[in-house]
Length: 213
Length: 334
Image 1 (cartoon, rainbow over the protein chains, first blue to last red):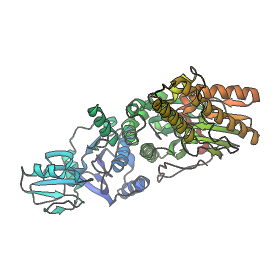
Image 2 (cartoon, rainbow over the protein chains, first blue to last red):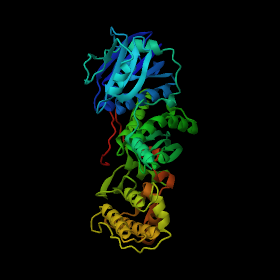
Image 3 (cartoon, rainbow over the protein chains, first blue to last red):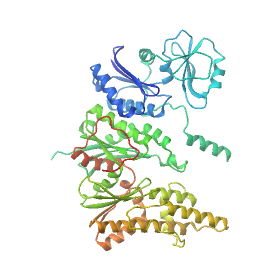
Image 4 (cartoon, rainbow over the protein chains, first blue to last red):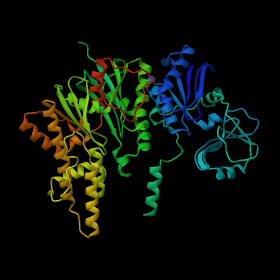
């Protein structure tokens, strides 16, 4: 079986071709403003190195965010167009869960991506990638409250946070994600979308207006 | 001659549309998923919301169009896509989907300028005759384009500020009409009288337009009347506003036809659906023996069939782009 793993949703672009449970070629680069221009160069390169044609892919794993809205949209649009065109299963996975594959000595991983004003996207996973706290958009103080319930955790993310604890930079384990989700039921390709975890400003403003009426 | 089938994608604003067009003039199937109801509650198009909806719609629309056309991707000769101008987050979805399909099926990727699409909408009904002048009027554009042959575009003039459709929407809001305001004003304009003294905007020898002054004049007048405790006659204001818009658009367009010695006129874009504008152009063109072409309303608003028509001629000219094509929110038509 040949799988494509694609993550363009956050700090890094990660692409891998997995054949019979082994990564045969992979590519990582910092995500940047030119993602939508360059992504097919990266993709073509990874496929060529693995001597795989795009239409030989049997399943696609796609990071659906949270993180960069545009980044997630580029990856999800490619993955769902591809899954639809090739009629293959698509498995969306959380970007924060991907961070949580980082090898650590703690029992829990607090995966996070910083947004503005001390707000962040965060999820808490154990080392088997079981969810302790679903991915959420929340204030740092709310996250710290949740963490009072557990001990033996470690923060994993690329950003600085105003906390005393150590923060580990993610070193992701793509095979761990694939093994965890390989038996997931494939979702309807038309329903796959980025997981923004955040309403648009227009929606937030409209809700405020409706409340004040 | 072998038939050429173009699969075209258009997502530049708030319509997710895919079409299959044969030989640049025959529409095989088109699907348009409009988000207008979603944006109406915000009083205008919200770019982030538009992008979020395109990504949810794109594969549904692709599947539906192939099914209606009873075709498979293998029969498609090239993939055309609107790369700009438009909302960057919206364009992105269409461009990335088009690049993915071109990559998977190893098909040529043909970038199409949105305005070229609006002009070529005309070709879906009647073979375009050259030289021609096109007046493209929509929520995002007000442009006069001269074409001497297929897929050659010369910019003659355009708006310096608001697009005409944008001015319509803003005036409608001030008059308390719901979004999108254009059709409401058009309807009222046929019921009211031209009683308000509004300026004819940018009435000069150039081929450029300006609608922000006219829009401000309406806003100020409404505001002043309110302060004096007077009711605005909405229908009369709609008539007065529309009359100025129609007059300046027709005046400069008819003059451009004379200056460039052109006999063919295309009225295109969403505002070409405006009854007042259509009627005035029809009358003037009859008088001046100008061959006027106004696409059916379904081809005036954003749709992928027009991109497929334009894409065919771009494809025939050998216009291609590799998989590094990017969406451009602003770009000159050439």
